[in-house]
Length: 256
Ligand SMILES: [Zn+2]
Ligand SMILES: [Zn+2]
Image 1 (cartoon, helix red, strand yellow):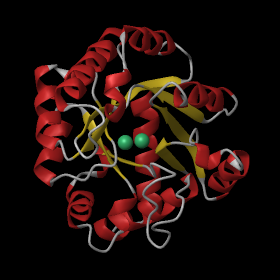
Image 2: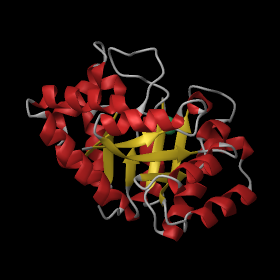
Image 3: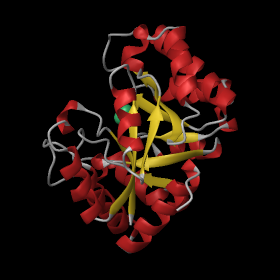
């Protein structure tokens, strides 16, 4: 059994075949999923999907790329939704220096506000990081994010930073890039980090693992990520599935 801890089944790319996609995931042994909503459109959709599927949960937050669109109204909305029985985390939130829609200082402020909100409602956070590792770690430290802990989603940084995050009560979530031939850091991290701090994810519809790279990603493919981790750690696929699933259930506070 596998738990895909970061999916965007709420994206337009799944509009046509959502139920068939979930079915394919279940057939591949992917029973549990967390759908991540991060704006006006994807948050209600994440909740709706979680409400209509027993083993699908939701996370709600505000994406750093759209930080300029967040006002107190959105923050209050996220706070309200945090008490929904299927909402298991706040996020994704963080910093994304690849796109320039929202200036870095606005992103940082919105990131800090969401960490404070998560601490207020006592929920873990899901971190999106693109080209901003140092600033992310600094803010997590300054805001005492270790109090709630969280997930470094689709982690692609160095081993030392992963360890620093683990020391702050964060889980390291490994995504499709670990299967790419030239992905040096993700492979190093998958090898070095203890399985007990590890989760697996697809981030679908993005970042499809090899040999589906470039195509639409879907939760069934998280199996390819787990297989790659097993190969790198020289352990069985069953062990990777078992441990990462039990990590995720425990992390999200789900009674299985
Ligand atoms: Zn992300
Ligand atoms: Zn995402």
